Length: 130
Image (cartoon, rainbow, N blue to C red; front, side):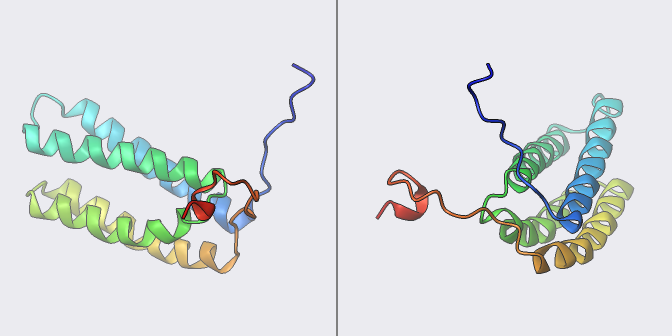
């Protein structure tokens, strides 16, 4: 195991703060889903599960310093609260929408600190496939 190089990208504090905030929101949604599983409709369960899955993937992309991670966060923070409100999730939708709006402000600060990794110059990288 000593032959392998440890992968630990250096992240700016603003990006770490944003990632932590999103992780806390994701844990809150997961707890809400687990506590209210029997009383939520199938539609509401699917929306909550989709939100948790997409947030998990996005947080992983942010922590791995993917180029498009922070750029994809803005649309996600605008679309997912609208899904919650449109489906009629009540107070949970309001709380999630407020946390998403607060996240937009923290995201604006994180985007200012260009935190994407440099391309690896590999032929199979998505940027080089054309």
